[in-house]
Amino acid sequence: MTRTVAIAPVRKSIRVNASQRRSFDVFTAGLDRWWPREAKIGSAPVKAIVLEPRLGGRWYERGQDGAETDVGRILVWEPPRRFVLSWDVSGSWKPDRTVSSEVEVRFTADGPNATLVELEHRNFTEATAAMRESVDGGWPRMLDRFKKEAETSSQTKVAGDDRR
Image (cartoon, rainbow, N blue to C red):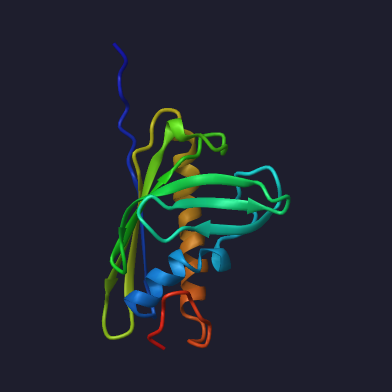
């Protein structure tokens, strides 16, 4: 009988000085503006990071060579409160739908123009256990990049955010 090893989820949070709607939109529709190009799983240099804003939508990289590499899919879509993505990446940082973990991001209004953003990366398996330590250290850097983008001048237009 095979033993299942419980692997703790990675939980991170950050307070952003932006509305709940703006925070959600920057995290999703604005992903290409803040996700670092070097954090890639495809073989080609990254031209764009895309998150299709709908249930079942894809999260993928478009390489400079035109190739698209799937990172995951949207499993839950509840704007502007939360979304859940599959993270279809192996422990060796290659695309692999057979070893999916999940990333849930929640956006809670925290005052008139601030949002608490809570991220949970969960459902690691033995095949993705090596990745857990890396994402535990990586998500804070990603959230800092997101925060900077969300808090930039309101002149920066994000698709779907017309509350400026």
